[in-house]
Image 1 (tube, rainbow, N blue to C red):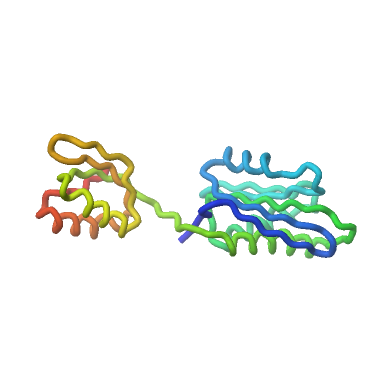
Image 2 (image 1 turned 180 degrees about the vertical axis):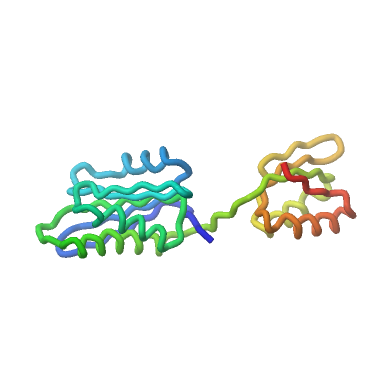
Length: 194
């Protein structure tokens, strides 16, 4: 199951006198990726190579390195780590020693791999929107059961009779959660897909 990063991370290394800094961060849109790249690129560096993946969308660039030696290996590292909704930027300062195409691919892909390996991640769960109502006394237990299946409360409206809730739950957890909530409320709490 794919995962994304909890927050930004960084990895630094020196390979044959060239300095590499790898930065990675979670994204929610191509605009987020572009903003991260523009904000963190170093114009004094020799190369600012990057790749991002967002579902079926992805982009990468070699930024002047020989074709296929930087952007593609970074993207391959993102996919090898089973990451999604992630941008990776590798900044290189040339140290005077040629690395060759294989060396460049190993340096860029390896830096991206190491950065993503050490990053804190969370699983990406496809959630379905559902609606339910409960009494005030049932709310705390409902939220506890929801947290057990990594569900989210997206909206709650307090009414005179209780609480109307909009939830986001993984599709595979809807039926078990429905059974638990029915047992908890003697059949009063019903989950309805929105």
